[in-house]
Image 1: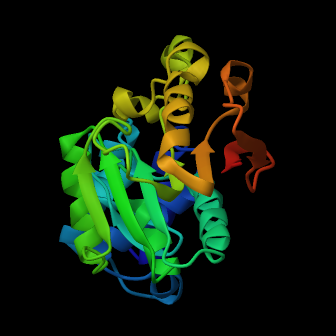
Image 2: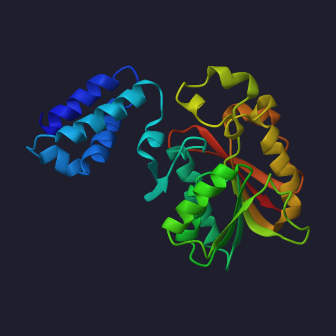
Image 3: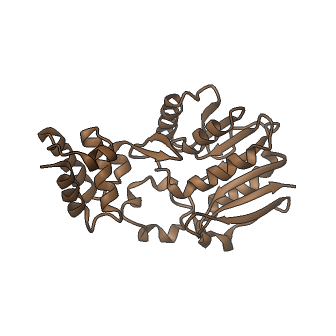
Length: 275
């Protein structure tokens, strides 16, 4: 079977199991054959038997509800290849805008010192460290599995000298004198009562990275409450949120905050300045 026919076959198999069957069929075919999307589109080649078996195996796993990022073991975040694996939260395209905005703001700082809380794969820290060459970053996560994967991604991008990875819960591991120019986080923010209603694919991800407690704002408020003492004067905070969290979020008096929308015009993150 020619590669384009295989692509069509994959689309048909994924129909009803994926919101983007053509995209995912391309992803699996690229992974199975080692060929780029461009080569697949113009190739008259027949797919090798072993490659077709790989491709069908990927489809079968996806049809059972496994996220494609776990199946192929990687994803893309702002142009950076990021390793993914089961048990660690998958970075999303919606988070890219927050990371980009953070990089833009940090251009006004000399040698900025940054804290990422709940780093997961390390995608945010990697994009910031790559965009701001003089930045030093501490990336924390409560999950040891996430810490291990984060270190793998940081090593892959040759950033181990500038990103220090720490297994910790929120800000509890820092001494009182340690302060940052920026705190950035994509915390759990799905309201606890809504966890049963989320997409089946998202349910495959760790609950620890999803459950935001009452109103989805429990972890957000904990971060806001303790972040003031950890920010320098004029320091910035970025927190990914959902619009449903807003009635439950408690803003400290000494933080000037606003909410920002993503590329889909949905409220996506909270931006604040210590005043």
